[in-house]
Length: 319
Ligand code: UT7
Image 1 (cartoon, rainbow, N blue to C red):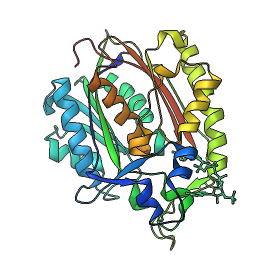
Image 2: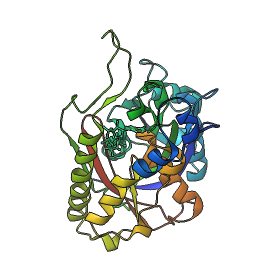
Image 3: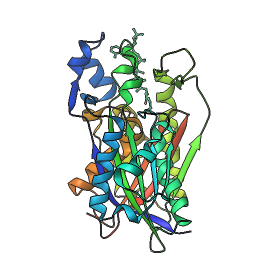
């Protein structure tokens, strides 16, 4: 099977910035509590933006940076749990807005915060069977529409945003080493669906999810490294789901990773679910921290419960 390489990234965030002090005006909380328990200082909320407009913006940037035209794309996958519509899918609307060929496979994925990793894995498999060799993988959320703004235990955590990646499949691309996992459980994290008579707000047992994350993510990273016959030293950057700074720090400590290889942007965006990993990945590419030829290990966890990890190399010709 042909592997994939990363060719270009993009990201988009709403204009409206909501600080911890703004949150404290809505619910009984404080900048001090949020900062020490989560590392979050601010997040972005959609006003004029929609989930689709964020995804479009991020996808266009990724295509520009990769230097691909719509006709080059054979696969368009969008990871999200907060789309503007249940149907049509976001990926179908991207087909129209970006002018993708009608035989481009367009599909949305629901793996909550692990969605971008599920998307990369799926893109590699689908592209291997596709005559066109480029794929678009987007993670985009207008997550704040799923938040109960009277529940201080959840509302302070989440924000809106999108990140996108163009990947290329080819015999010269290393196989994307991936671990994806699922363990069905609606007790610790769920969002009710349409017709249940309950508002579609996130319900979460924070401590149980925290425990799940600090056990699962290090295990997942270790498994991906083993699968690739690599060690942490072979990885240039670890791009981890930005859910809580304390979770990231525990993963770094447990695996003895150099903290400088584990960048964070949670202070500025909070938890943006499926957008979190591609948003950070884009910042690293745009700043030049991740250079052509370098390898990033991406890993995350989320509702489902789900988790995932993948080792992605930046294409030599990307910028
Ligand atoms: O993307 C995947 C989704 N989710 C996650 O990754 C979430 C994982 N979990 C977490 O990040 C943490 O569990 C939280 C940040 C959600 C909570 O932190 P914690 O250290 O586990 O706090 P806790 O739930 O044990 O609550 C401690 C106290 C409680 O008060 P009492 O019972 O000690 O009096 C809470 O009522 O903090 C209280 N509390 C708050 N206080 C001020 C809970 N939320 C707030 C708040 N402001 N926003």
